[in-house]
Image 1 (cartoon, rainbow, N blue to C red):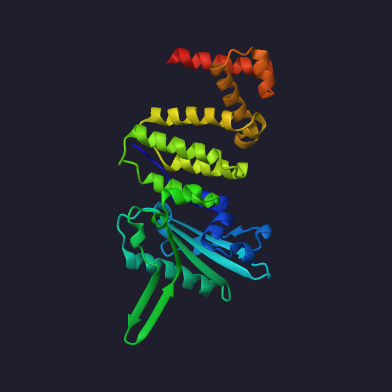
Image 2: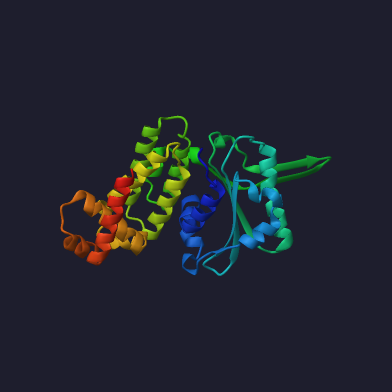
Length: 299
């Protein structure tokens, strides 16, 4: 059975592409925020403010509180809320959750500038609310927050968007195909998404982060399908990137092993030639070759 911790995956990728997220959502972000100053993720502060402390075991939500700075020096706290599953869709409860976070932040940290954004990734996410309303005996309160649904954009729009965060949203859309298409078709779709990502020309660390999100967010029922995806995408990396980029992106030792394995499988180069191309010793190549032969014999 497929297992995943979607909330953790989202929390990690949000940190990796947070500046891109701001630019994607707010057209004026590059002029408002001091990107060079960086961002601080206030995980401890947010945990203390959680509407339901026991929700740590619940993977339906991924929340982030981020300290950002304006170019004029002003400080802003950005509340991000990712709604991952839409099984229950209690609209009022969701909106109230957003409001609870807001007033608790205001109460605990008075004077802070706060903006809030809810990202919806479920199948029916386009129907989720963008405001919380309370009314009783003449007392009325309306709390509005920004929203973004993966259904706001077509696959083509996201694929053509030069912003790396668009690829994160595209991955979230592709995940909805699980159980709706055959395993083989899902494999081809996931491979195409990964190959396009590798060709985007993004910063290498950003490519690595989004690729890890893709490989772990869209899962297969059959373990062999996953292994096939890994074999094919590792092979693609060696063709799309030069050796130096490849080694830097994946971590030198692991990447060197994969690079040598591909050369052993796909070429008739001598061990000395492979060692030279991979910038490793001949002994290293011999060890990788021995491991390959041993694995082949045990199958």
